[in-house]
Image 1 (cartoon, rainbow, N blue to C red):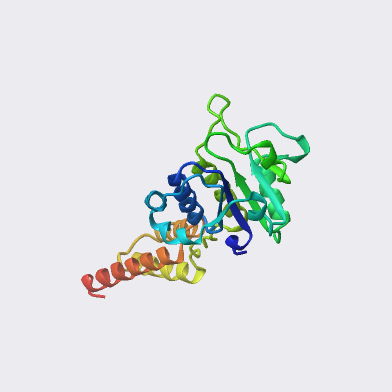
Image 2: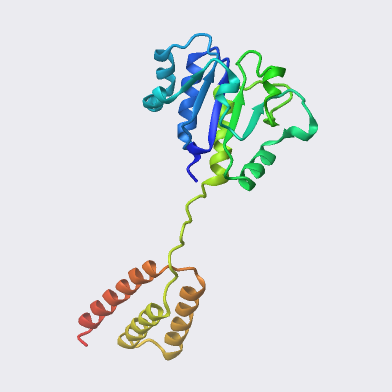
Length: 239
């Protein structure tokens, strides 16, 4: 799923150009590019560029609108972010939001963020299908605009982009185990080790290598060491 084709972040009446740049930057961090700005009171591209950092190359892709309805006209599902208590049936936690977009992957989504000072108005929230509430401490509920964008963007990415599967190293093969055991047997024979000691060493080696989560690579290194020890002892002993 190409995230930027399905999710539009809409900043409504933002007052700070730096926040626009910061929002774009954090969106880009998580593979999102579609940013719309509605009724920006004053846009300073230089300030936005400073906060966008490496994402400043995307500034010319921002869509500016005078009307919120126009900004969401091609969207099929609209979410508003708000700390205000709205209709219970429409209110979603972050987890509910994630479940919804996961179960409806083909929709064209818009996520609305209100101004830094007042948030979304009742009229703006009335255009939303659902409301997302970000769980914060009750004593410090206010989030920076870019922080809110970052949280939502991160959760969208986590929903659709799987973590890379890490293939664990292949465990040591029985073939490599037996080659190591063979060299242990040879060393014991060259050094005239007691038969009981040789058998115990072989048994212990099989147990350690078989149950010790040793990788094939580690086994090859150990095999090289045993081969080297056998070669040295056999030449030293003249056999």
